[in-house]
Length: 199
Image (cartoon, rainbow, N blue to C red):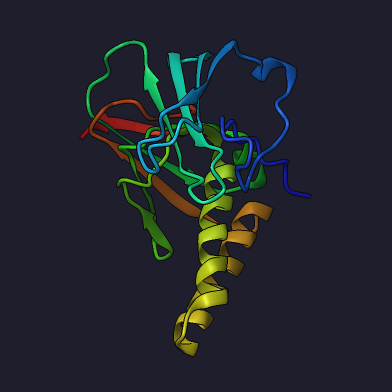
């Protein structure tokens, strides 16, 4: 059986939300009734949290969630307390034991899953602390949307095949090389297996 998704996302409505284990506890401050940058109503909840990531250092997690039903704006990001240089991390994921490897991904990072997809930074890109399984599950959710909404049969079939490949990787019966590139230096793959280099 695959390990439980270990996303740490400050958004309570996150699709891949999981309960935090005791070692994942962190102090957070919440500010309600802030002005939303999208709908301009005072329905925004701002959450700020601080967390120590072993072998990476202290990070700050930020989240904005609009409670206005017509808006539902959400934005989250991760920022390292210490300045890091632009970095690239590459890891060969080769078994079920790799699913629990910790990943810090900022909103400015690009995640590359060869022959499947690239998750590019942009206005809707979020930062989060997760694990390898969490990254793969996020990609799976995106592909499931393509499978369910694509107009072309070809596109639906490609999405189905990629979902099957991702599931095999999560179960440990297939491999993938994951690359994370971050010009802000606020991302990391916390593992001896990961190769770090300057971007």
